[in-house]
Length: 353
Picture 1 (spheres, rainbow, N blue to C red):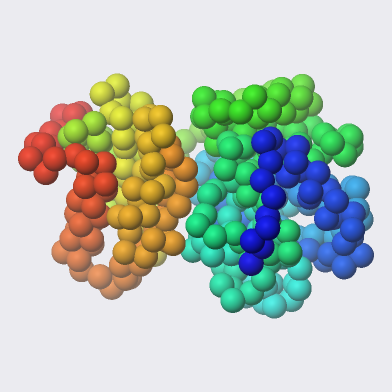
Picture 2: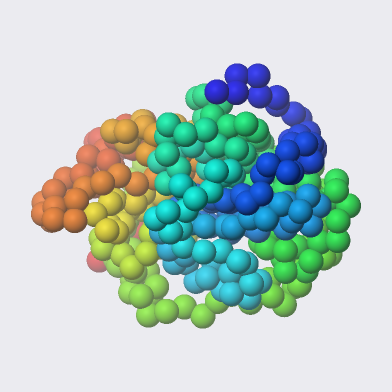
């Protein structure tokens, strides 16, 4: 454990601690495995990309970025291809091969990464609050930064290195994605860091990433989402059934939250025997992560922030339809209880039959 982990008022403190650690240990850190969370999102991808660049450019540390799962959401796939982010699928032997591992946008105790629970990480850089400090040589957890890549962007700015356009574009998109276009950026330094990076970004590439062509499966899922959604007590819920990639769950939850009367949205989707869940909120201090953790039988399988939370749990590849529906309904009722929505509140189809 790292019981004496420092906390700072802004990202600069965490960024400087990272720079000091890399400088002090540069001889022993190479090669470094950089491990974002499963099914990495734009923030995780940008943070991993920035850490790799910083480690190599300033400290001659070689590294490899590897992830478990898939990159499914079209925006994320275009982000990787357009910006040429050197990410790789995690190989079975990678965690044994690399003695030094940096976790970004996740932590060793979380269930959304393949890092062994009994192993000490080298570096942890994250924004998600947890009950205990991560087990790592360097643990940097800044719950107020809005996006993990903010810490890495600040480190690059402090180091005064020339930030390539494609990396700047990744950082800009990572920040925008996790802060809802800066809506969730509560600290002044987050917007300041964003603005200092923005002029280095390629706006054409950014627009291409933000406005991708959609596949048929996206529209099929969207149709199912709108058809099956129910609304009650300010919560709109859609169970998507079997999905082609888990990113669709968070994407549909984000979309449903734009329904004007909704204060909360929840989506579930079935993928490879697991039920993936996303919970979203427009409520200040909404406790989304707390509500979802309490709704899960294993609390550590869910996480997030006040306004955004997600997780997954195993149901089984051979589970019956009745079992799936029972687990979905039980989860929905526990979320409903956590949000203090009365069971007597009648659900209705907000978008027609």
